[in-house]
Image 1 (spheres, rainbow, N blue to C red):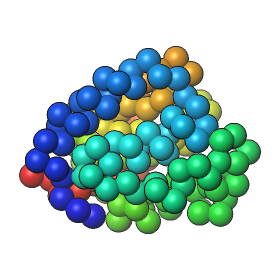
Image 2: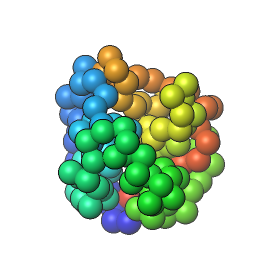
Image 3: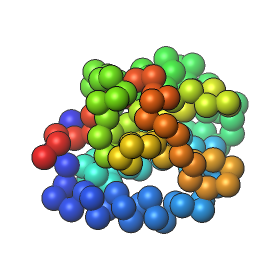
Image 4: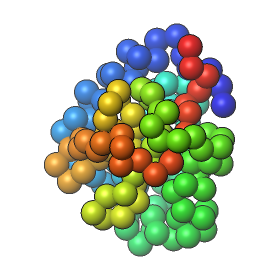
Length: 138
């Protein structure tokens, strides 16, 4: 994984702000692409380039998840070995359990952000199951 961009905080903040009211949408603003968009904003590299356009429905996403071994496997392939969720810092990707199932979210300090039907939603860092570092921290 590459280093974080010099202006990563500005890029990440702008992405969070731009998506604040954007509702969840399979293949456009779902948890996996949200996490990938954050990684892209922070590092300048898109870890989901091969997933973009690969699905547009829940069924299509389920097929991709099955082929790739699930969200944790996809995150590990893109970002490296997982860390304890409570070690996550701003910009790191975290797997959480939601009422709809597992989802990827992104650490924004003491809470996690992820897309919901009504725009960006928050989760507790304590609800994390696994986490992954995004770029070299510095």
